[in-house]
Figure 1 (tube, protein in one colour):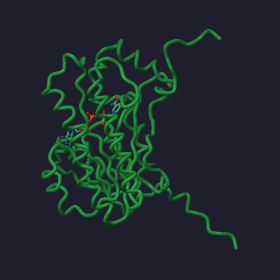
Figure 2: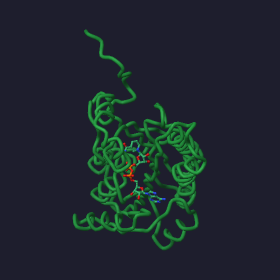
Figure 3: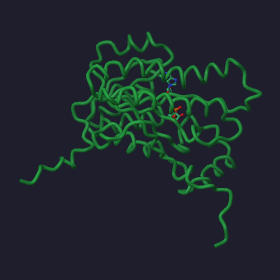
Length: 264
Ligand SMILES: NC(=O)c1ccc[n+]([C@@H]2O[C@H](COP(=O)([O-])OP(=O)(O)OC[C@H]3O[C@@H](n4cnc5c(N)ncnc54)[C@H](O)[C@@H]3O)[C@@H](O)[C@H]2O)c1
């Protein structure tokens, strides 16, 4: 008898799953929330910007999807616990919030360091603890955290941000190792340059914007929606054997040297 084949057409289906998307008020988080809902997930759209996240949830519902906005501050463990109380079991977590202060290390103030590390690294840690415990108890779940090409390659002015992006990578790989035996997968996405409010400072400088476009093999910036395929893949059963990985969605930024195209 021929063994029955997996139902490949349903690999990306998220019907019946609840996805908590933190940072859903803007940029990549907003696109992630919309995409997960489009594949059938019930989305808890969480953000410190309550007006923005209400808009995200309303837009998803207008398209026939399921979404509820949640006021959520990733810097407060107790606040997150209160916000998640009564929201039901979480099957998928997407964590996007991060800030960047672009400044040389010798010019960085201690307050700036604390602000960037406090959200990007400590906030991610507090969030992972709050959500991953329940997943481990239930024996299933998929966690997706946004790192960056800056977790790999740097330039002047990115020292503290880059440290947090490499930091979340290693923290998530350790969590993948700790929770793999309990059925929870943990992966990272490392975007290249994406047009969002986070990178508005660069977009406002034509030379800087153009130089970044030319660095990658695809020779352009990404739109937030171009991260959504990676999010749905890692959230769904399509990636059932993927954990502890970093998925580069960087248009070829880290693949090519980029200093010079030899005359061939
Ligand atoms: N945009 C890029 O080019 C790029 C490149 C590489 C990596 N990334 C990474 O992708 C992720 C998303 O970036 P983005 O460009 O969408 O950012 P963004 O600034 O557009 O959105 C971040 C969202 O997080 C929310 N947020 C901020 N502080 C919060 C808090 N304390 N609690 C809850 N929510 C909070 C903001 O309100 C906002 O809605 C980040 O981790 C970033 O490092 C972005």
